[in-house]
Length: 159
Image 1 (tube, rainbow, N blue to C red):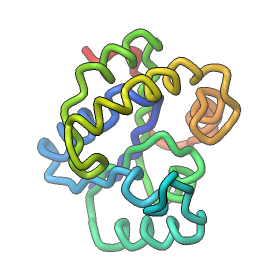
Image 2 (cartoon, one colour):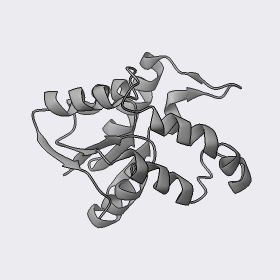
Image 3 (cartoon, helix red, strand yellow):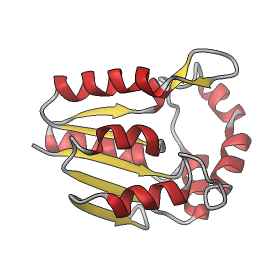
């Protein structure tokens, strides 16, 4: 059974490839966005220990799965239970174009209008990928990729 982690910048196509793989493999999908944040305004990150409980529950409940997100700290919690990773390492311009074409994500936004109202902030976030040093950064993703000892793939386009 395949147990896949997918990560990369916002707009890189993580969710799209995760959904496609789940259909092809008969796997289940976990978008880390749904468990990484507390339901507060402004949003605040949940404690890693709280997120880890949810990740472990998901992994223990499913034989074949795809977990995706930009959170290297959360992905590391699942890495030892995975057997494959995919690093969506697309150019910034491609990520921005994807973000502009992103369909409504009802699990994140109450409406397409609310999602679109957040687009400028998202594009700014995407452009900072290579200069950030946090868990969402290119450097954190590269480190996760380099440390991983199982099957790994780095994609530089959505083709």
